[in-house]
Length: 389
Image (cartoon, rainbow, N blue to C red; front, side, top):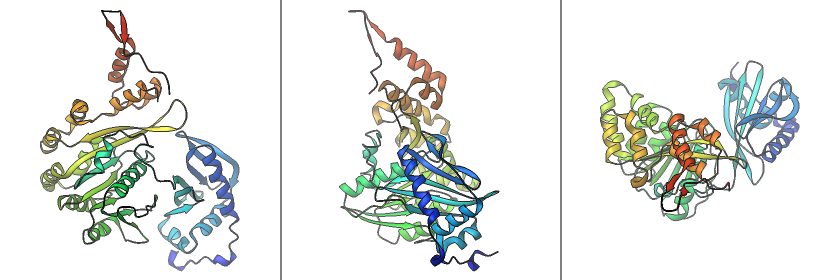
């Protein structure tokens, strides 16, 4: 059945399911959760502190989820039938928007709603390292924010765009699917384009952006070879390009960007990438000792050593270069970030181990820290753990 032939009579909709949805979303926010999950023939659940928990004992039947989809999508319901999933933004109130996806699964329809506060995040409010401020003042190049789904990549990018908007006189174009954080012009002109609504796809919108006099281009995700190549070209021609990848760390990010191209193209891409890459922020959300989660961030800053490693196919040495550059370049590996969060009392030792890249090395570092070093002049130990904030 073609989705183009399906119409929803909005006049006959009562929007009772939407009212129920708002109650569930309010409960999710009350629990300080991040995602609401609605599934046909199942109770309503949500992700709180990284875990799936029950939000409501209500069981939504097949006709309930179909009605909810019709109420939320209205004229786009046919698109759901045809494409089997639809992305959109749902506004709960003046404080919260939700990035939403409705999709078919074997029992019927499911929906996922990701909470997005309407208050724009700042680098400071997110607890990101101070070096992130430097990315806001780059004139050109490529900056990537990476991590698994739900690790806060979009929020980190929003904090960078927010600071640029407040401090620089530039033209920013964002290409997103869908638009999550909404920016009002401050010192910058900010044009935001949603895939499907304002543009057909990322690669077409990115090519068009090069003719729209931008200084900064935000691409929601580098999904394919064509988009990656166009983003690199945009950075080569004097633009600052910000984007995301679903990669776990900087080493994997660089490998992914190169290996997505055919073998005969890879040397050319290495040359371009080594030239334009300015930095990679890779993040994982970890549980705080008090409540909520915070980002542990690996930071790569391009320097001569990193450039050589990219050109010489030595991506495996990138973690060592990041670790060694902590003092000079303010870079840090995940394990260094976890260690600092532990020393500051933000996370527990167990949480640090659970998220470590090299658990044994981190454990050794923590043991040395706990034992401290004896001051022979007074017998005092240094490096005693700070109290929990």
